[in-house]
Image (tube, rainbow, N blue to C red; front, side, top):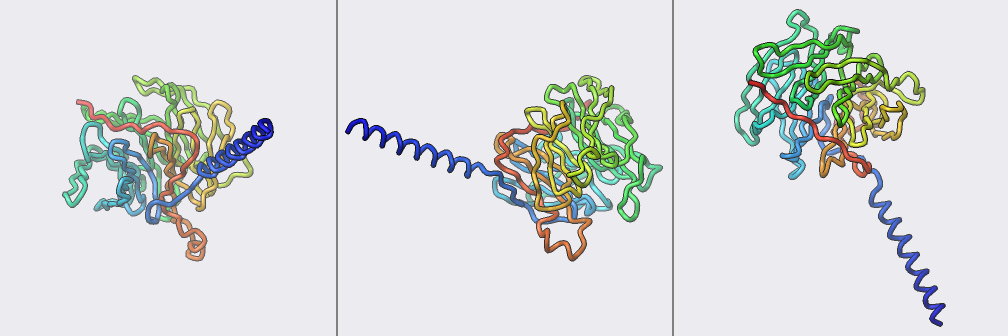
Length: 338
């Protein structure tokens, strides 16, 4: 009897473990949820860990958005006298102070919460001789320098090839802020390896991601090589857009027009994960949330026709992807040098 009882107890225990494990797996299933209202073209996400807040842009409305995750509240600010915006990132050591790249202007913005007045201080303008050019995407390196690119935007919103430049800008030094790095067509995804020895960059028109050796102190990049080429993947659509990196050193790349975010190992060029998104035009990504375990994904409805919108009602929303099983790295803040 004792032996039979033990067998029954063991069987019940096995059933319990199996059920518990199954429940655990179900609770950890990947979830993709829109968290903001739709805009025309959401872009440039940045997660502020201190404020538990996501900042992002509506590019062609020249509008900044701030989503407070603690109270799930959205506030917005439209930039007057600008047609586009390509960057918003916090300034280190200054509460509610941001660096913004709009059209070809780079400026410091004081944007307090509540009804306080927004103040703006223009720092510099690039490419005054190229009225069709605009800032498109940017990131901050570990030294607080700004890496931001321009492109040539035609009246129909198409982009002319090789009309832009990727800049490295060290804010605050004696008006020597501009240092041209690369001639580009569509300057997009930017990331650095965790040890800051590699720099990753996407020129979307080429449909490639390039890796460079990176010298952290000077910001010098060298020895370009292609580590991912979308042309080699006939099962993928669109173009590579915004990009970020996780703690394992793998890149997460938005596919604009491709219904997806792909996870690429830059050491092998292999796709190790693919997230099918419920909208076609995926623009950018960043990690945030608790322990940087959530992936925020910005999207667009700009190129959808009116009869396509009912099929993608959440196009233009920011989505959060949970239960990826991986954490990302925090974004850097801008440092002003004296």
